[in-house]
Image (cartoon, rainbow, N blue to C red):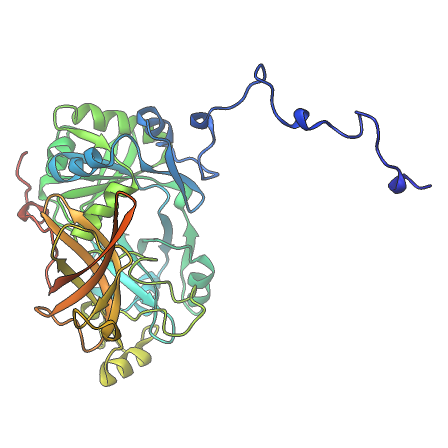
Amino acid sequence: MTDKDKVPSGRDEVPLARDKVPLARDKVPLARDKVPQGRLQTPFYPKLKRVDTLDKWHEWKGYTAADALYCEDMEYFAIRNATAVFDLTPMTKYRITGPDACDYLDRLVTRDMHKVAPGRVAYAVWCDDQGQVIDDGTIFHLRDGEYRLCSQERHLAWLEASAIGFDVTIRHETEEVAALAVQGPTSFSVLDKLGLDGLGDLKPFGLTHFDFEGAELMISRTGFTGDLGYELWIEPAKAEALWDALFEAGKLHGIRAIGTNALEMARIEAGFMAAYHEFLPADETVRTGRSRSPLELGLDWLVDFKKPNFNGRRALAEERRRGSAWRLVKLDIEGNKPAHNAYIFAKPKNNKSEIGFITSAHWSPVCKQNIALGTVRMPHGKPGDTVWVEIYYQREMHWNRMMAAAKVVDKPFWFPKRRSATPPGPY
């Protein structure tokens, strides 16, 4: 009889069921002691963990990121009433340098990168050969011939393949840069207390550099909240010192750390689209018709057909000639029931008149509106049109269905004057 034919009979061979369950005297990790979702921790994670009381985390490109830290409502109102601090470190970052850096980026994205001077930041989208959006992001023109591209997805292989024929160097630098979003009406007042001379003159989508304890601190007037705000970029070794200095400066200005859920509410109010919500990256889709072009996302202002060549130009020119299939819309919906995952109809009592669906929605506390972003088939969804949204909601175990009228609007739901004021007023 071979070893594999033996039937274990002793305790050494077959552990008892109770041996698989830790005894009370053994150390059993509590739920709060579990390692959160991501494998990596940002330099700001110890600071976030210190204020966390909810234990709500998720994975963001391999990093541990907070959904919420103590109270989603308080975190949201920190964005709109005070200063909110969000750990931006996991955002994908690439350093692009070399004599052909500008020409390379100009070939890559749909907008004219030659118009983006050093010290400026450009919002951009890049497409495949079919003119479908692969991703959107921000491109920082740090200095002559030196750029940083920030995006939702990882694109190194595609960026390198697109660089054939250009004298450029592309480096993935996500782990080399710690970043914070500092957003809200008191954000400038907080940063001003750090002694950052000249920050008040920084215009929206501008960037500048300061010295912080011997390290270079880059500050850009950018953000994802639609409010006054900045993003801070520094080497990881100085991250905790920057956090401490920031919160000391902001202790009388209502400064608070926030998680992703509060930021999500703010970006919908600002009318900003997000990958995997308003569009799927073209290189991730399987079925045809599931990706979107920049024209279908309302980003025609980012497509410069005066440029002789860029990825997807021929397909986008053809789409402009024949017309788009879809349109991204902003909706002001009656009532106060958020229209999560709802269908959009052209008529209120005709289920056969379905024209699209909601991509992002929530009740806006600051706007006092039931708002949403959605995608509808052309030619529906012109500003001023009224469409109908099918909303399901549950109250006391019973599901209810309502058809709510929704007006298509062409402005962000939240756009305070302080967002673009230069210099920002003290708050």
